[in-house]
Image 1 (spheres, one colour):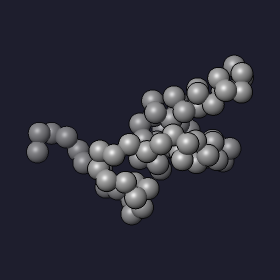
Image 2: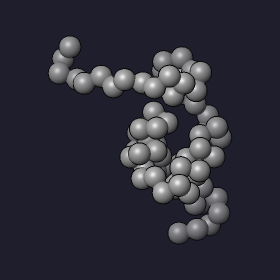
Image 3: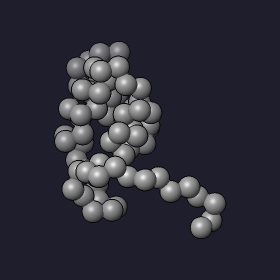
Length: 70
């Protein structure tokens, strides 16, 4: 290995997708918003849903823009 640390995936954390396959944000948005409502940080949400923190932030930003909330 080239010094990279591999993360163990939780069973079912990939939502039935194949490696490298993208998930539609419509499926992720309700899950992200529910975890925010529970008080999870962007980093915690990313870990639970196997996403980067930046992806979580982008989903939240997009939803705020839809609602016209700062």
